[in-house]
Figure 1 (cartoon, rainbow, N blue to C red):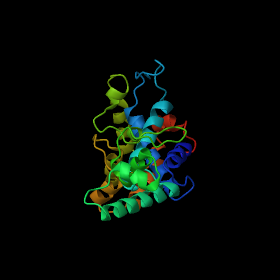
Figure 2: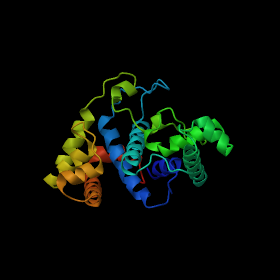
Figure 3: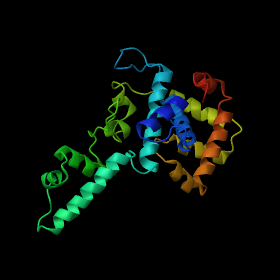
Length: 247
């Protein structure tokens, strides 16, 4: 869990030891529970042709939850390096300078010639100025060549379409809901958990849940953490969580 959270933070230029780590571990917990509730032993990994291990399947949900939160709640999808930001400022100034001496808007070629940049370099600067609306095929580079489409899950895709068209059983979801309701968790916190984990099929951010209950996001985190500790006493859930010693 911790390793996945740190990896996702590094990919987006965040400090993997910073304040965000605790939040991302918490979001990873949310993803883990989603993976558990949707897991079906009959699902086949299309890459290997073998049944999915619960850890492999849950890891996918952990990453998706962390990626979604970083995209939705923490500003820009990618932190712009200092040297790239300097290029952006130079492109802006060149555009303003050329516009002042012409009746037309300067083209990419004009700006590239003015600065001695390649046209691709200028295009990249403009893309980074609008990082929130980049093409899904835009590559952030680096060793893993992460693309934006890999960071933001397709809202229309379902577990069935992702995993070879196999119908996902809701047996574990029912078991998990029963486990939640049979513990000493307060009724209000049970409802909070259901919203937070999307038991009704909807996707909610921590802020959405906080607004729904009239509390702060930090209070939501504390309540979920407390409930998860109580939930882990359930043998079925504890057995599934056993592979996550750092959970």
